[in-house]
Amino acid sequence: MTSDPDQPTPTTGVPAVDAVLADVEAAVTGPVAEHVQVFERAHEVLRRSLDPATADQSAATD
Image 1 (cartoon, rainbow, N blue to C red):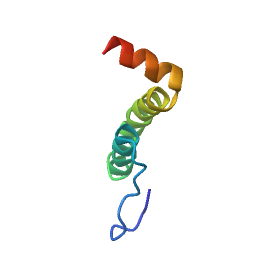
Image 2 (cartoon, helix red, strand yellow):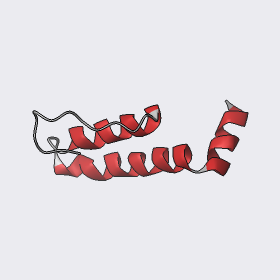
Image 3 (cartoon, rainbow, N blue to C red):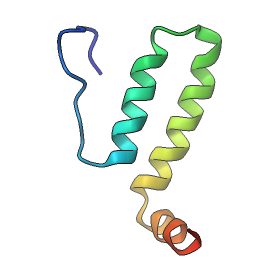
């Protein structure tokens, strides 16, 4: 994440992770009351995206 609006948001090459980073960065300007929801969703998506066992399970159920 970057606090400089002139700097591009870094990317990882993993679409789900990049989407989470964008959501978290966007939350910075939103109401603090919404931060918990954004971080909980980010945690869940990152866990599913980055945990090979969970990713394999998700792919099998899709």
